[in-house]
Length: 507
Image 1: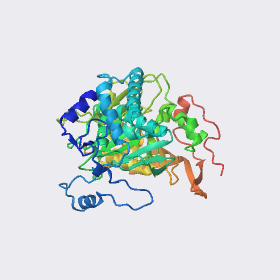
Image 2: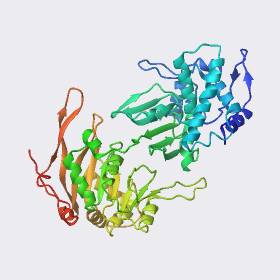
Image 3: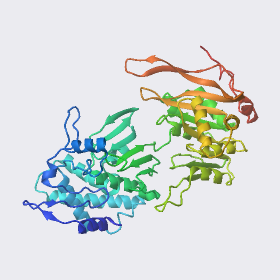
Image 4: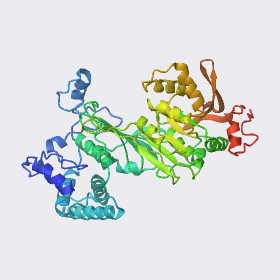
């Protein structure tokens, strides 16, 4: 549906009212990313929280009632407008866009030429409206208004500038009036606000619609991705009491390289050389760690070591990996449709990948029963496969894999599961986000095998924290444990030379 159709449809269903001053009142939301005008009485309220001050918003009392009683019959507490001094001007620009912009141009934005043309037309029309205004505006205000209108029409509304900021790694929208970011491993609040809850919903719809995902009252949660591969999670009422929420895990436009990880202090050149050999020697590797620890980034770096002449099949919930090899097949899971049918699970994709003649299978993350199929693939000739999983330590990763294998519904004895794990996994790369926000590979751990009913492990490299400096930065060092891994014979079979001092502990 074009911008013209969206606006006209919204306006035709809304009842136009006019105040004594002749300003429009209570016009329903005109379309995706476009703010609806509010009445003068509504605009005098200031629902946003002022940093450093304790200001009661007009809906705080209703929200506390909903939280304490669970009553949903109250008016939606989060759906209150915020004050925007330029809201009326933006609405004039939107109405002019309806009349003057070329029909269908809003939808034809796949090519860069169409996007540039649309941006120029929006800017030109916005300038005409601003020049007609009797109230003088500063140049900086005009620039900001034009940019916000372009972001609403072409981008993702108020968060568009955040998506373009390379220093931001996470964007967290907690309802329309609270937006946080993560920069340098630390969370901070921004001054960015949406107009209302509908505005946030429109942005969510704009994100999920192009990739065939949906979000509504029946399915109030969704995982999606942006065109640059950034991961998106969105939730809406009734499961969210603060309004629609968006969480975006950003990825660099250019994937991080080994040099970047060394510069950031994630690992050392010796560890990079070891991991390079492990991938080329076709070891089965699991990257473990907590949420936001950098598992996907590390998996990307490990995948870059795969030789270019091998066929790689990647399997993910939402495609995030950025492999640079040419022979890559990307598979993505699919949620059920509106009828509850047609879902494609990670487990189904892993099974299908075995029929696609892969040299390597890379699973973005194992969460449940697909773990069993992944282990069986590793144990039946698909060496060199890689995946990630959530865990607090290498030992915890093995325990989680046992639990996830049981989720496959197979009535297997625990010892049989452990034997599968110990024979399939060669190396665990454990990554952690430390208190200062830095991300480090804290363990490179070899899986040795079974001793009785226990899977035995041995650390090859570890990170030791020695203290915290006056700036709150964690001080520590990477060191080899002095143990030579038992899988070095695979290095030799692959013709990979191991430097004499790679595993020497110099402490």
